[in-house]
Amino acid sequence: MKAAELLIRCLEHEGVRYVFGVPGEETLDLMDALLDSSITFIPTRHEQGAAFMADSYGRLTGTAGVCLATLGPGATNLVTGIADANLDHAPLVAITGQAGRDRIHKESHQYIDIVENFRSITKWNTRVEVGAVIPEVVRKAFKIAQAEKPGACHLELPEDVAGETVTGTALSTARPRRPSPDRPSLHATAKLIEEASFPLILAGNGVIRGRADHALRKLSERVGIPVVNTFMAKGCVAADYDLFLMTIGLHVRDYVACGIERADLIIAVGYDPVEYAPNFWNPDGTCRVIHIDFTPAEVDSHYQPVVEVVADIRETLELLADEVHGCKDPAAAKSLRRWISTELEADADHDGFPLKPQRILRDIRAVLGRDDILISDVGAHKLWVARLFPAYAPNTVLISNGYAAMGFALPAAIAAKLVFPERRVLAVSGDGGFLMNCQELETAVRLGLRLVIVILRDDSFGVVRWNQLTRFGRESGVSFGNPDFVKFAESFGARGYRVEEAAALRPILEEAGQWQGLSIVDVPVDYTENFKLREKMGRIVCPL
Image 1 (cartoon, rainbow, N blue to C red):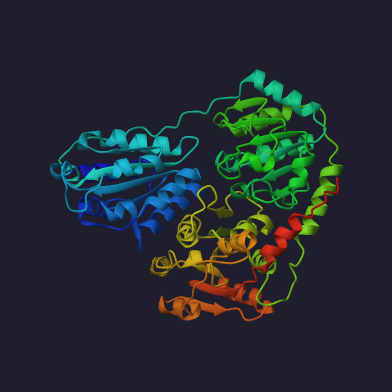
Image 2 (image 1 turned 60 degrees about the vertical axis):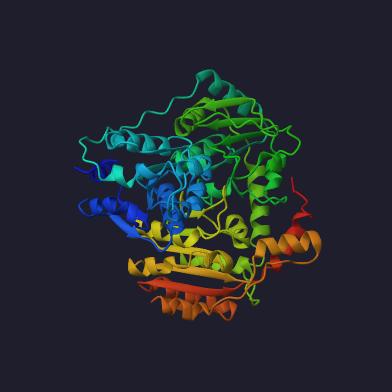
């Protein structure tokens, strides 16, 4: 068989269902081999869209999503999506074609050293120099991509290697068992929790990756410990849980900070500093911290744990729930939760136009089920989604946060619908982020996917504008024009809706959600709320 055929067989053995990508001349053998496989190739309209789809697939399934591109510009177009997966710890394997080995030693058409270019944005990447090693490199790529902390790997296949005649079989895909917690560390953790008067759990994305949400809830209930989560950990405890103190992550002091400031012990579980640096929640570095994660703590002067439990998160939490004796009085935490909830729910019923983000998110939540999926793009709306949108289950709110890449939402929503066709999937984008990958509308329509895309339109790069006006009192280079989004949607064969009053949003969302195809909802948004938010944050007086 050809080396390309062996590579595709190895992908099948890894359980790959989809390959997202754009074909090219240097990937002809791979494309031909895909025709005879069980894998579905999803042609995208840009390689960045393919990488974001693979990224989203990895987040939702825990197994590496796969994207494919040709050499040169095809490969470099993958960079943003690969970097996003790597920094947000989503398992991804990228495969790129390359010129034949007989011309990569010299200046040659479309040739650049992609392996060297990808080195800083991947956990591991390599060129396949001979076809015989394909079973090993494919297995290694998936093993490393899926190991904690997950991330991106890359394989480059020169076109002459792809056409080689080879023999070989795929290698075992058995996953190693994660280590159990060190018992002395576990005992020390339990003792610190027992001694604390107001311990608090800071839950990060590792809780969701480690399928540890039920164990986290059990520990919290058993001991009476309140929980806050990062943006990417939304849903690790349900939003209506009475010891949930909401989501933390703003770079200004938010209401949830009152819980952090009240705590005399922070139990950081699956916490990724890339999401929300510890200097924001432990500015003087004096807070006592316990670190529970698959990997040792990052070295940071604001994050110096007194105990590190480096082990499987789920097993650690399960054992810890039985190890801690006694229960904390939950009254203070529940009182704080009621106060935070009241503050966050302000203006959710406001009828003003353009619409306030609080109203938009309330109406979106109302039309989605508890297990439906919301994908947030990056922009001013991301901060509102993270703060206000209630999540009730893991992986029901996807946010690009460690890398914070605009253009994420539409491609990610496509992958989410492929993974969970039975659930509603709704993407929220700003008008800036949406137009960065709007070409993938054609992909979604071609696949017949039932999606709703809500575009919050303010005709500017809202977060940058907000910061410019706050710091300098004037704006620069942030305003732009937009197409007629209703006609734009229709030109792709989708439905378009324009919201012209606050009361119309929910009925439009319900109608769009019932249609069996793709819908775009154009919602003018009032981002003067950003300035009010900053003013409020400066006046917070904690009730405890």
